[in-house]
Image (cartoon, rainbow, N blue to C red; front, side, top):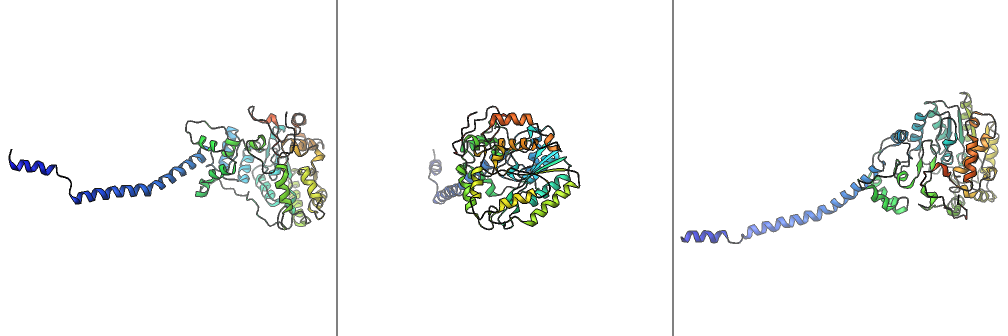
Amino acid sequence: MTQDILNADRTTDSPPSTTEAESVNRRSFHIRYAAMFFSPMLVVVVIVGALYAFLWRTLETIGPVTAARLQDKTGDLYGAALFYRPFAYKLERYRLTSPDILLVGSSRVMQFAGEVFNVPVLNSGGASNTLDQTVGFIRAALAVHKPKAILIGLDFWWFNPSRDDDIDATGDMSDDVDLSLSQLFAPLQWVSEGSLRAGSFFEALLPVKDLAPGIGAFAKFGGRGWDVYGRYDYGTLLDGGMQSDDRHFKRTLKRLQSAKISSKLNVRVSPSAEKIDELRQLLAELDGQSIEVVLFLPPLAGSVLQAIEQDPESRLIPLWRDAMANLGARVFDFTDPQALGSNDCEFVDGFHGGAVTYMRILDAIADYGDTILSRAIDRDMVAGLIATNAGHARVNELLPGDAPPEIDFLDLGCPKAL
C-alpha cells in the first residue's frame, strides 16, 4: 500500500473543520430559536382551532334565519350562546309558520306554550324590548302574513319617559356570522361563569361523539332555547344544572332599589303620554285591518310587586295600569299573580313567570268570551296541565321523558315534587 493511499485514508477520517462546526452550531441554534418562536404560535393555533371546532359542532356558526329554517326540519330547540338576534329568528319562524295567532312582546311573553292552541300559533316573545320594537315587529310580520288575532304583552318600563339606558338590540335582521377573536374565545367565558360545563366543551371536540339534539351550545348542553312554537325552555336553570342568579329574588329587588332616574326600572315617574298615544295608534292600525287584538299586562312575582308597592314614591305601575284600562281595548291585567292563582314558586325570577303561570293566563283569557283568541285555546288541556304542575315553573308534560325533575332553584322553600 502506498503512502498516498494511507494519507488519503487518514484525510477521510479526520474531524470536520472549524468552519463546518460553526455552520452546524448555527443551524442548531436556528432550529432551537425557531422552535422557541413558533411553539407559542402553534399553541395559539391549536387553541383557536379547538374553540372554532366547538362553535362549529354546536352550530353556533349559523345565523338566526338559517337556524329558524333548520329548526323547521329538525324540531330541535334553538339556544344560541354567541348571537342573540330574536327579531330575525322569530320573524323567519313567523314566515315559515303563517300562524292564525301571533303572540308579541319581550321575554315576559316567551313562556306561552304552543301545544295548547288548536290553530297555528307563533310566540314571538323576546323580539320586542320596547314599544317601538313591538310596532316594528308587528308591521314586519303583517308584510309577510296577516294573522287573525294578536296577543300583545306590555311591559311597564316601555312607558317610562325617563328611560335612556341601554336597550338590547333585537332589530338586527342579519343572518351573517362573522366571528371576531373575542367571540372565538367566548366559550372560555361561558365555562368560567358557569353557563357551560368544561366537560361539555371537551365533549364537543370528540369527532366520534354524537352530541345531544339542539341548535346552539345552550340548547345542546343545557336544554335552554326556543322550541318550534317560540316558547323558551329554561332547561338546566330549573333542574339545578346551573345556579340561578336571582335566588330569593335578591337580584331583581336590588335592581329596583338601585335604579337610577334614567333606568327602565325607575318606578318613581308617571307613564309617558306619548307612548300611550303610540299604542293607541297601533291598535287603530290593526283594527283597520280587521285583526283582533288582545293586550295583557304580565305578572310580577308577588314578593317583587309588594316591594314596589311599599315604595311611597312609586307611581309608574299603578298609573300605567289605569291608562291601559282606559284604552278602550280588551286588556287583561295580570300584574298581580294572585289574580291568577299563581305564586312565587311558579316564577323563574322576579320578572318572569314560568310556563304554568302562563297556562293560567291562557285559562283566564279563554274564560273571557267568544273571541278568536279564546276559541283557539284548548281549555281542557290547559286546565289539566295546570292541575298536574301547580307550584312549578315548567310543565312536565312538555319536557323530554328523561328530563331531570324541577328543584327549588330560587331557594324559596317551594315543594317541587310532582
